[in-house]
Image (cartoon, rainbow, N blue to C red; front, side, top):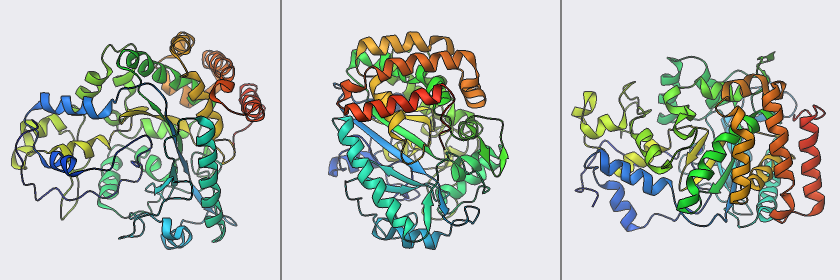
Length: 441
């Protein structure tokens, strides 16, 4: 079905990418999956069909997950560089292979996975949960555990989504990240900042039944500028005012447009899986895995070029489905489909306030009627990513949209099964943001 089995000695087992831990249901690969990963892709149509099938899994929306990222600082002197040996010692059995070669990162007490970003940012990826209260409980247990581990070595989780004092510095020494850093450096400083100095709250939700996917896909994109503005938490970087409410998202947009452009999901898309599949194949390779030597890829060579054996790829072995799976991990769009929908545009929040955007987003997707209303409220600000990053709630239209979705979402917090006390706490915190009475950090 997927072409003949091809030996590809230049394609090793991948390094564990730091931000690709599964959050919604991802089965352990079986023998059949391993066999498929080794097969060569026959043509573009086969590649697109594969992307559409693995990136959009259909079914009733029932699961929610979260990926909580935090910068790590010395408790006494936040300006100190992060020492990888110190971080490895603090994390102990939970240290991932990217930091402790040969290690396998023991799950956290409530089952979350711990990974690291290139600058040593900690990421806690929860198990998928059928209720938001269960998600809040599990994430709280695992976050507290990581906080205690770091504290024992004099380290703390930062409250901001961009490093307020330190310049970007890569902590993880892998071929993937070295190639990324070289590639992004040719474009500008945004890539290094994104990789090493930023952190996000990522929310994972089911794509939904086939007929509902276009509306949910459109809604999570339309919400982007509004929720980015509402939860912006990254204004100060390396000791200076950046002039952006979310300098983190500005850095993402400055990384590599073909890799971060939200256009693949903007507006009303009749067939999101087909649109996304085409976008994936037309995105340039970021890296090419090798058994030895640097992983750098030609700047403008797309995955479709590799399939067609164009340019430098005419000398390469044909790409496999494993290569395509890895290519999928190198796209950093605001919403990334991974079987579920991974919402990536929210700034990291202080450890005690990450629940606010997670619960609000879950409430805003709680049913078709609410999804339709979300799209109406957000229509005036759709696509205004740059304005949201720069102005935040200082932009009147974004502020109106934020107030509208906050009201719509907070009215539905009780439907998520949250206690009345927690629902009231979230609503109060969101209202304080809207009124400028709560600085997130």
